Amino acid sequence: MLGVASVPVLGGASATAAATAATTAAARPPTHGHGRQVRTGFETLAAAGFRELRGQRVGMISNPTGVLRDLTHEVDVLANHPDVDIVAVFGPEHGFRGVSQAGQGEDFFIDAKTGLPVYNAYNDAARMSDQFAAAGIDTVVFDIQDVGARFYTYIWTMYLAMEAAAELDLRFVVLDRPNPITGVQAEGPVLHPENSTFVGLKPISQQHGMTVGELAQYFNGEFLPPAIGKQVDLTVVPMSHWFRDMWFDETGLPWVLPSPNMPTVDTAIVYPGTALFEATALSEGRGTTRPFELIGAPGIDHRWAEALNARNLPGVRFREAYFTPTISKQANKVCGGVQVYVEDREAFDAITTGLAMIVTQRQEFPEYGWRSQDGPSYWLDKLTGTDRARLVIDAGGDVDEIVAGWQGDLAEFRKKRKKYLIYHQMRGRRP
Image (cartoon, one colour):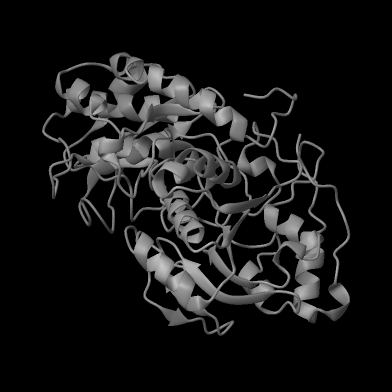
């Protein structure tokens, strides 16, 4: 597999005590269950003495997930390192320090801990370009933990930042992190351009099966040239000893919730499928301790769990559940529904399961339809990237008919993505 050999930290003699301790910790990751040491892109960068950033004015796109394994934030480390000139920070959805809920960034502020200016980089390409220019940066660094689903917006912040960097002739450096739900295979429908929104700007599959570094290479090769006429000067700093068939809890890395409603790896596993309930009138469990695992609405009862378990979907069972969400849809109402229990994550198919849940819910409780829309598009079309799932469901069709409709697009995407993959599977097979 592609990786970087373990090397001692360079340039530590002139660093502050805090920066030296943090980068030394980064160079000594613990061994995980596969007998290897998983090192993130930042740890690789630190172990090489930050050579990739020396002599440049750096702007960093990050959020609370940008941490070392001792949970020190990377921006705090870089701000105290004598060989790195970090001059600005850019926060995605939810903000740099994670203070905002879904669909929100945060206003410009001066970070109290580092004194650095923090800009709002959420969903505005023109503003991001202006901010990069105003900050006077030479290099943009991206380090955020993704969760592996097309509609998780951090990857589109990365894409827009790549566009802005290319237009301004800036370098773009991606510090790679694991895909927490593995990168074995791409799954689900590929977005059709007419459904392009910030929950899916470009045609990739719903569960993309790539790391952010691999996605950056894909974006640079497939999307930037037709969009702006050129590629960005891209560097991907890879992980070492990460294999694409690894789940996050096999890496030895700490899980920091990437957003307020992504508390655990269990959440990330179901999210590519159960997040489709964002498009319905049901609560997807926001404002509970099990978001995206608890799904329901007032008046739904045991019949839904029974119907779902009768389907014998691979790797998953459903428990009749009752809960009261504190935010978002159905807030402060007692909801009946199900809790999703993944019993075999290797066999579990999140997207097929999510669609089966919607189909079964519509059969048992048809009074709950699609989420109301502000515009002409249905939210399900934006999330799946196509109107096919919605039209088949509305016509009384079942899951097999929906899945059959995206196989051609998916096969083409799988073929294209191969040349951008960096990492092998454990047994050396390349997907």
